[in-house]
Image 1 (tube, rainbow, N blue to C red):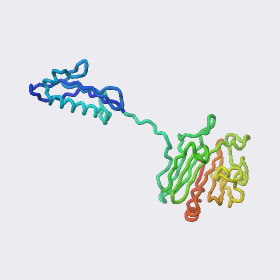
Image 2: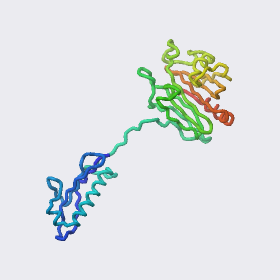
Image 3: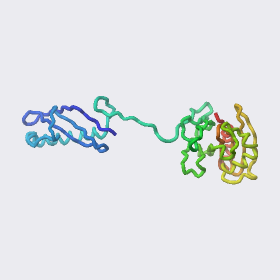
Image 4: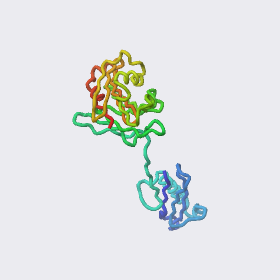
Length: 279
């Protein structure tokens, strides 16, 4: 917070001698070591203090008034510019705020919102990696983004989390393709990594934290705008995984829920999983 400078402040009053007592006040802002000065009657002394003679002439009333002015000046100094413009008033500029960048649209007529990864969201998994190609998906209105910590138990490659207390949760893993295959070019495609059964066997444990053998209930292949997506349903745990590749990264989109949520909201969970696209 800056210090407000009031360059001239004329505060006349009548003393017993019918004169205006010149006053020079020096106070310190509690958050800045610089000084704010209030001058009365256009007069100042070298030391910034009224003389003893002035105190004597003004009497106790003058002292009381001086103390009141000191308090008022310090209050103005500590509260900053207070929205006033002019010479000597410091402007306060709000810088960029750290943290997540909103990417959700307004709800549509059915109450669903579309999330699109912001272009300027941080992430990249080290020097030399190209920016993450944005992805998008749709969720019901009550789903919200959950902050991802560096110490996230799911690993540093979790790019995003969303959750709904009523329906379940989801997360997106964005991993360098070359961690899994050295011979894939910069424009990776999921087909080059392998067929659906190979992909879920290799990457399923990254999603659910355990071997997927005997847990894959179904798998399918879909194509949207020329890009191939593998879709899997696992149980237990109850989850829907969508996998694709773009640029030099593999994308794993996981929607999961507990038993009761799965039973009550499977239709919505499946729609969320099917909506995932790399854009």
